[in-house]
Image 1 (spheres, rainbow, N blue to C red):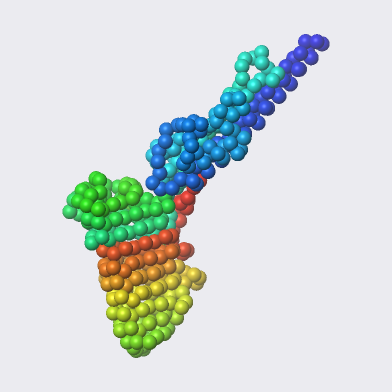
Image 2 (cartoon, one colour):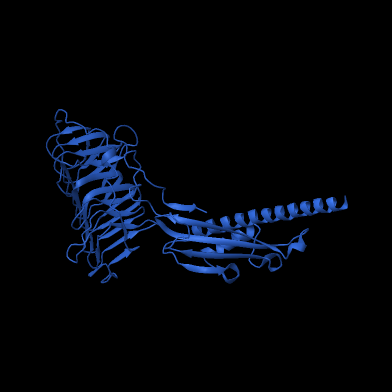
Length: 423
């Protein structure tokens, strides 16, 4: 009977010790997860790699903030009589979790604790429990909703000169695999730049190359820059075309007579001759679908605004603006053409352009899959929610896009860019 009681007490002691160790392992896991996630959220591009380092050696930076979160969750490097440890590591390549792609930055936190044996000391010294957690900053996946798509599969798809600057908050995707110094997929002349911010990237189709100032697939020179440097990836599919609604058909030709001054309200409808605004007139779109058989031209000191959600369907001709006055276009937020600001079908290969010192502000999709978009001058292209899908782009001015357009016609395909806990 005494032997049985001893055995039972031993089993109970083992259960208590194992249970305590498991509870402390859960505590380590919680601390590691909090540390990893806090660190990636505190980091900003350009990101820095860091080999595994003890929290006690950190005094500043995003990894140090991660250490503070570990402490707040009960595990401190050197804590509990030096029985606890927390280590941090970070990088921009070689993600420690297999199968995770489009990672701009990762942080791994490892929390460890020496747990005493209360009832089973005869089995040896303290038990060691440990937990690891990894958090990442994901860039937008190709095809999941970026800002700029150049769909040309050959030749130079993005060309910048004269100090051209393209800034994208949600990625740049180039489908060309051209790779020579005279005809690269991306050609940045001196003082030109492309910047992908917010953890997004610049993608070039596999085999494609870039010139940055003068060098092919090498360091940027002569004031040119790319940040980050391009990533090779499979060419993306057209993110809009397969999802478009049925193309509109022309109606009866609307009559119009735009003056050279004052305000002229242009109702939606079919316009068989080119819509041209010049002088100092303000052309006001009242909203709806504008079927343009010969395009639209805003020139000289004319201004264009839209009081309601408007879609320009450019069946022929081009969408062009020049001069010194601003052009503003906002896509519908509901209905058949939800999110479509400019729709130039594949059958229309006429290049569209913005020139002079005019500025173009668009919220919505600019879709011209078989046409080039040219921008030159001292104005700017901007959009808080803008996606440009063109065959190719030629820029000598500044284009800044913060977020991708919101439209049901943009295809999905991957998680949105941002910080994620993956382990």
